[in-house]
Image 1 (spheres, rainbow, N blue to C red):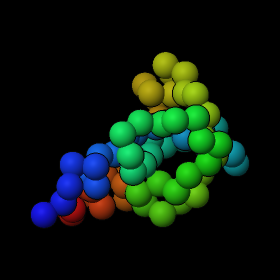
Image 2: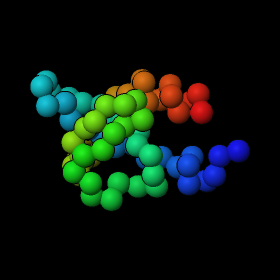
Image 3: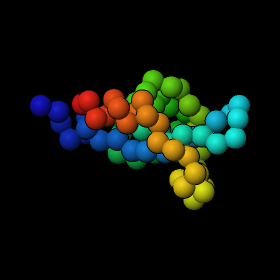
Image 4: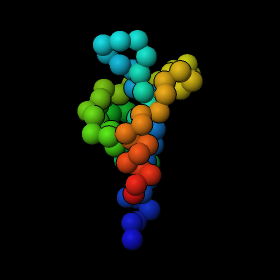
Length: 72
């Protein structure tokens, strides 16, 4: 059985550095604590920054992060 801490994750919109837009990736932990970069649940190593409200609205959910979390 998983512990509560192991099951905690949070979502954060991550801009794409090469093209306009981005994705909402999932990360392990309770919340973003100001890290400059981290590995998303999907395995992508991404730069992190405070998102805007528009990022939350326009960036779709990362399908791979979502799929992996559903499988846990």
